[in-house]
Image 1: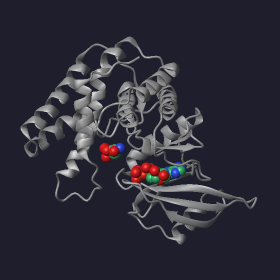
Image 2: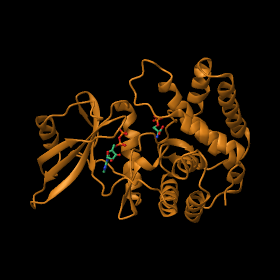
Image 3: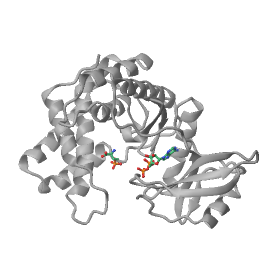
Image 4: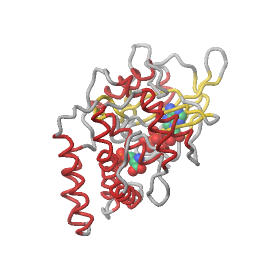
Length: 317
Ligand SMILES: Nc1ncnc2c1ncn2[C@@H]1O[C@H](COP(=O)(O)OP(=O)(O)O)[C@@H](O)[C@H]1O
Ligand SMILES: N[C@@H](CCOP(=O)(O)O)C(=O)O
């Protein structure tokens, strides 16, 4: 259960006096999240209808980091992307503080998590990610990735002593190969990226994509790197191999909305490796730290994907 901060009925009622959304009927902590505290909140509006909301308290991001996300989600939602955007109170302010944590009140979007991924799900997320990228391309704020190139250069060195020689070398090679890619004059398209669009961050309603959640890894980056993150999660088999049908569906649908640029064809085989390395590393850090209180996700899953990507160089259609 990921409710790190307890919110009381009185806290919520105090918050709601600033909004004109209705009065509190019920609220309940959401299980399954990892990083933040989330509550489903039911209100009754002036017409007597029940409306569902989500209250999020940010456990890791601080107040100064929040405007990027408030603005980005609002920007994307205004351009038709299915992301939850925060409500503004009657003074036009969305960002609140509760128990010293930044807090946002957002709509509860319809749908549920998928268990068995099909090519149709992958096509839909490909389409939605390309729309997200198109919409976010001229977004006016920038944010450096929290787990991007500077982070993985530093962390890969720090963790090396805890790894086998083979794994340390593998990590080092991938870090170097990405540095080499950055030195190319490829001018790869950049913009606002989601940064963590795993399938557990999407909801489907009657098999139609209805929500893209958990935008809080978003940053400015290579658009294609974001697609690589999606491919490595949505199109993977349990043994770390890639299902060609699902990947083809993802990439074709993406390309229909935002056609790939020529240099992106050159970058793709490395970017899927870099994306696998990034999550291998972020899972290794807590897994090898005996004092970590974080929920452990298996790093081997991403090592297997990385190995597959090295042995089977990826190609854009
Ligand atoms: N706006 C929303 N609409 C519907 N469900 C939501 C919404 N926000 C969060 N949830 C539910 O809460 C879960 C945890 O939220 P998430 O943002 O992924 O938390 P964490 O960052 O802690 O992992 C989601 O997987 C989803 O089931
Ligand atoms: N989806 C990730 C977890 C989120 O990444 P993080 O770097 O913010 O911890 C995973 O499955 O590893």
